Image (tube, rainbow, N blue to C red):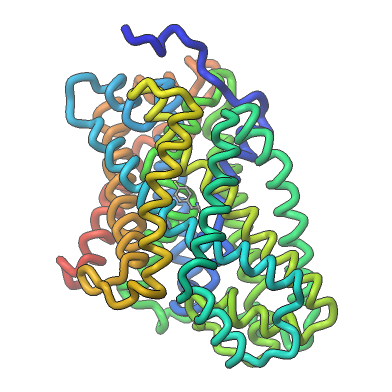
Length: 454
Ligand code: PFF
């Protein structure tokens, strides 16, 4: 038996703490930066419908699977599989998760750094009087620079590490409990502002009226990747968080609440953005520059724009921070439990290693922009490998693990809190994890990689 079996594990202290931390992980740049532009590029409402279907049929069962694996094992992402399936190669799913955590945080921290720069730019009223072209040039010259984006990226990594180092209750839970309500207040304010602009109705129609002509096969894979990324699934983040959830909390309820919060915030981000975009007659398919170019352009033309720009970029940074701590925690928990490092050392080591990888991501918009691997710059390679390959593959293996390896009895025991909760929906969950989710993930995955043409 290992040492860690005797040391009490840090745990979340309250129900609200669990929701704040898990929703904090889920709600991030994926919701506010990525979702609106990916939806914008893929037909708006139609993309939203596919996305919602994936959340319900795949997202919910994968999330419940992750929580139950973690809580049952009381271990990090790799250790959980080693404990529940000793002597088998299942632990490789956890290894993939840790690798994904490295890749994701390397590019995530780059974009998170941009949000800090844009808070600074909002504060100093830099957008005022600039037209779309000038704002475009401003964004381009900032991200293609070297020291400035690196500086902000490092500040962001330090903030992330600082919270993680403080532990679960005194770090992650303490901060997410304050930051998540703040995030909700900010996004509500932005939605109200956007909806009260003249001509905003068209943006709502774009977001909610399905037009399946804009939907390609790529968009369907994109929706799956986006669902995984947005719910923080497939890489053991929620296995790790699940291991900090006490035995008396209701896991399925938490899953529904966290997924609902994540989806509602993504839709609210769409409501904060598209009505404003349409009110100004701008093309919604602007791509990654949507929030860094289009929005500043709009902000500087609307009443209260200075204030709303500031709120928007603080919102982005807060959302990014509560997510990045959960990604770093995957690596730190593993370092602490399997490599026996102190939490302090583990956090510093993980943050430094990820930052090194992060430098390449940031520089891939500047001095390394012509270095491509498989036709992608480093940033895109990290994003694609993690979001479109590792996360869906990880999610597939996780549901197979719960459906076929752990099986119905042990899963029911865990999810029902040792039989204390009545689970009327349990057969549906089992059916989803055994058949529907694996099949759907595999199909979309294979199709998306171009190995199958329908
Ligand atoms: N869910 C986060 C977002 O939507 O921005 C990103 C993320 C966090 C992905 C944690 C994966 C993860 F494990």
